[in-house]
Length: 309
Length: 309
Image (tube, rainbow over all chains, first blue to last red):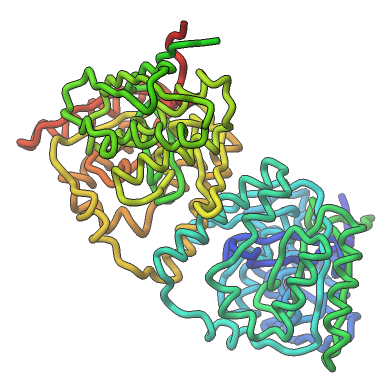
């Protein structure tokens, strides 16, 4: 029986343009690593080797809360020791908290001979996400665990649809500003026009079809958000200019990652993704805002095992 | 060269539950037949052999207006002679006007060696639909021409996505009452809550995934309309009772066909479809409303050629 395992849990992009609140995807970089081992001591012992100053009180630590939810469902297991090495910066809009929650439960499940299915793991991880966001929302956790692109049809009951996309390159722009999730939420109107809603669900349907039919052009036409992006983009400096430049540089489409401030763009190839990165840099170099960019690709498998003994 | 052709144009079901205004499907029965031949006389000469008393003035006849739109794009063609035999009752909510518009343009296109693609044919047919409904709306015309299930992502520009579903049986209930489209429209609120809109687009995405993954269970879970059905169902007597009885009888899902008054239910097999028909009859036999039911199946090819010479 495996006694120790190290996994890599990927960053994720939620609110996939028209698929606001329901669609997300996993990317290959950045990712966090978590080392988990079975322990004879009761409960969870957790430490961080990163420099993010995350809470060490188990009741406030996302990984500990998620893992405790799994532990509560395993009366035969005493506890776990966990070492977290976070790389995904909290608050950047690419699923740092989801990675914290998902990584440890997937790792623990390997140690328990995979007694839980992916949906059950999402459910445990949601306990951790709740600590982070005050909501049991799976739009980052689901792609982190399933990989590829996921659609959450319903939270109650939890209904996750795994969509296998064609290969996609991803370029991420991370302005080093803070967008408070509370502000990003407050900016959303509680009602939308029927006509906009219809346009949005036509695009969601078309995006799913484009993904499943491996039709990049259709995906591109469908990656339009007529509801949330127009409200939220004002929180991200130069949003329209960046987006226009990226589309000219060959992006299929893209938008706000999660609640921001990160932006992302999809493209067919790494070559295009690098051109898109240059386009982002070109726009942001003219501002006085610090930023980072990186080029990665869609992660088809979610949390993966790095080593086990 | 072919000189005369007879086609069968199928009934269609628009407003596919959550896919209100954007998704529709074609069924095998009932269907209209149209015989079209090239004519040396200028313009369109059209007659009806059915008993629906449809307008014989070309400017007011849906088939004539649609065919004229095609003729206007063919300076080398003098005209057409058309015989319409309508079977799909106008105003029943299963795409009678779309069949009138689509059937003749598809037939004419065969006579012209298929010089136009399906999308162009939809565009011609829309001219006819405009006469019927005052809107250039393709949600019945597209499935009538493409067959299977179609998703209209956008009308301007026209973006039609053909979805190939698994085999489906279809049961239709047609209460012999009139639901005026104007009333059905008036009953819709101009705004919806953000939360309902999100639920709806999650279901649309899931329905498209269910169709393309041939996953009947997923289709069933996704066939929920939280926006339009709750408003419009009051126009259809016994709607909830019928629906509940059909679900108990094995339906995957279903709802209002078009703007009503027809209702439809999907199922995996003809056997279940017949059980569903019995369930519909059981409910309506207790009312004093005249009605018809029929069992059919999804039409995978749209308008089809019956004979040509």
